[in-house]
Image 1: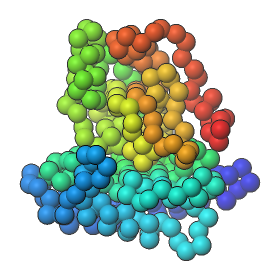
Image 2: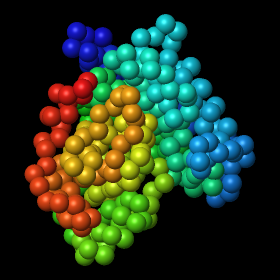
Image 3: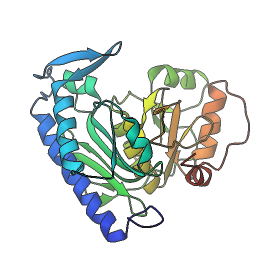
Image 4: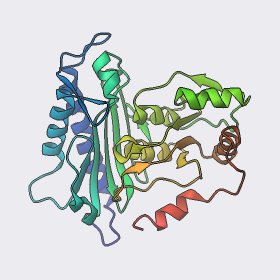
Length: 292
């Protein structure tokens, strides 16, 4: 660990390989309970008001904790399936994990789910892997490196307008945009939010949206992968997410290529009836205030 709270290039490469290996193994473990086109054989119950969880979520979470968090570690841990601890707020380096992002898809036999792992430093992701084993797709990135899909470099599309843009997101938002004559090509909702945003990174989508109340573990890994592919992620005010804060929830989100981002976000805002106004220079502002 350096004085500037980052890692040397060699250490970053080792870390990326370690996180990727853990994600691949976790995917193999989850596949034990997954049945394509059929309901999972895993036990299923409900947490909170209506959120499903399966024994696969729990077992994958436990596996990743054992694999990524050695004894005596100075790293923190934040996972959808682990009780939150305020100790993570005292750590500069925190693993942010969703053992199965897209649990509903997983339990229904839909292959569009993934294992999502990010290492966050001072509120910002520096290493990330989003592994979708049933689709045989692994997106990954490290700070300063390229975004990769199955080991090959990928780049976001250069689409600069909502007109004819391939856009995925919640149905009610897409219906509003279509009704406002934005000219986009709506794509059926992709249940895993991490996988949805990664499709911006590999150019499969031109833009993507998410409704409010996603959590750090849903988006932290995809956020870095998006950035390293030449795209951006922000809320609808143009402010990029910061992670490992006391509250892990985020507002409505939008992602698109850097070149077309501001224009497309302004189009989205107008279509949703939000007021026009200048958008902040999100990346530099948030990277300087990540600990705030």
